[in-house]
Figure 1 (cartoon, rainbow, N blue to C red):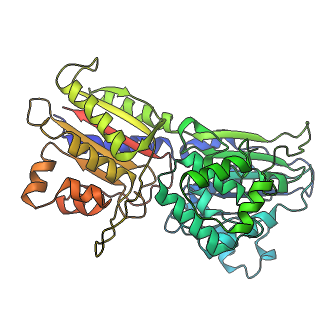
Figure 2: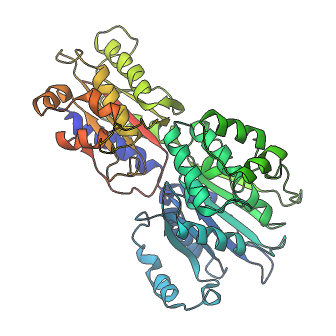
Figure 3: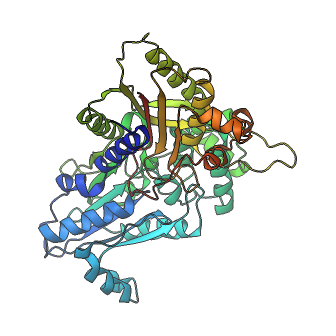
Length: 460
């Protein structure tokens, strides 16, 4: 007999496992340069960048033990996995290196920085990464390891924009309700490394980008704001987004956008014989399919709605709840028992706080669960119970320590007994405290990958 909470955890684990770099990256590692003395430089950023770097380094050393390789990636604080046994010796040597010159050909250095609001560590890493690809030739190879979160971690403000101003703009975007495409359009145009600028800095070097998608539609130009991908958006697009969400901007930067001096590269000038390559090594759809396969092996029919769902978390929750209720009552084409899976990237618009009101805690997944529980009101207590888990596949919902939360058939009853109001917590974007009080947080710690939202609704 299936225990619903355990079942939902197993589906989440299957989705995360499918997106692990150690399982997917090997098929996409390029061959080293053939010319003696040519360089291989590995750079990258994202929540999965540490795991991607370790996987790349381990496979590279096994396949090409005599091919030198060095580089740097930046990941979120606490998101560097334990060093694999095969790399411990190299890590000891690297830790003893006293200068940057000593680090040449000693593998990939992993540094950590802040997310979602960038900090000085991310700024320093971006500067070093940009510098590391200068002066390369067509004999050299650059491998870029990219995953979600790279936009904040790889931060290098455009000319005329101070770092504190860049932090402020980023914070405003995060609270505005803008979707990931809109946010990254702005980020590209206010950066010296995003929107194809890192690729341009690589010159004629052979460039291979290996990416884990965390964006609806798997648009590689949006993942981490596309540092190695040509950008089709314009300064005018960025200005329109800033105006739409009333994001304040320094006058000099506003003028630079208006006249187009901050336009992103529209051509990289790469040689026809040495074109850039881009490979998606893991996607949200693949992870949903892995979860669906796991459900079917346990005898539960699985339906995948979409891996591209966007919108306000609480509004997306209402649609999912309506479908769950319809299925529960036998009014949909979905046959029970079943699990309904979906992914994508929802948003949360942070509401203004009343005077003296505590700041809410929680992220997209928790807000979805609050909205879902509220929308299910009155639908529970039948023979077909509804359970749900919404969680971020990187293991962190927003900036808290949980991946997401569970909704159970008695969520509202237990909340009422403890004096917890769903509407009150929604009003102040306070999903974390609500589900913490109920003991229904889903806590995993960093998973070292990131294919964004994961939602599983089980009609038992």
